Length: 252
Image 1 (cartoon, rainbow, N blue to C red):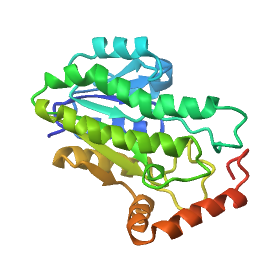
Image 2 (image 1 turned 30 degrees about the vertical axis):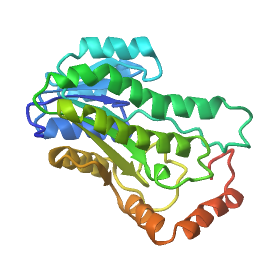
Image 3 (image 1 turned 135 degrees about the vertical axis):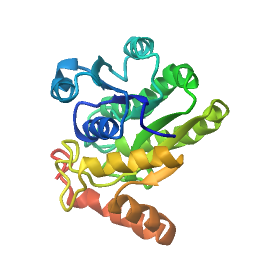
Image 4 (image 1 turned 60 degrees about the horizontal axis):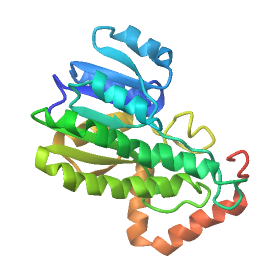
């Protein structure tokens, strides 16, 4: 699929990886890019960069009415980037209740699923179309300090595989991007080297062009996937040890 001339929608597009996707799509020649955000004013800086090609769209991926409205108002989308995500920094047992885990699953799994269901008929109208699900290395291996987040990304990976099979007859590619350490607000507590969001977006566009099923976008994601094959038990023990070395309440 070619990016030039396409129409895209990026959920959570007002900052971080989503913002990088918006800019990358415009630079690659997309005719229009819809920035999905709960507060359209939060995307004003992007709209100002290319007012004739970037449009802010009110979108909450946990709200069915919001999703339905976006699908109705954006009838010519050919690339859907499911980027909106939530991470609360809680473990499964230390969290005071299930609210954080439920919200992470609603945002990271049910959100992209609902978006994909709503936009599937829209994508079917395009000669070529794609769904890009922005996932995490925490969806390749269970990370105990990411108690609700990691399971939600595992679920989203399985969802991507199922949707890929269901949408193949209409010519819609489904791409799962696995992200490791990236310099975003969500990963502000993570120490060590981090990739720029633009690197992730570039990997995503390359994946669209070559119709890749799964792509590891940065060195950490590549390392995690390799370790799941090379030394899965050692990797699991390594992440388990983080529970004793991490202050869950602060994420440090």
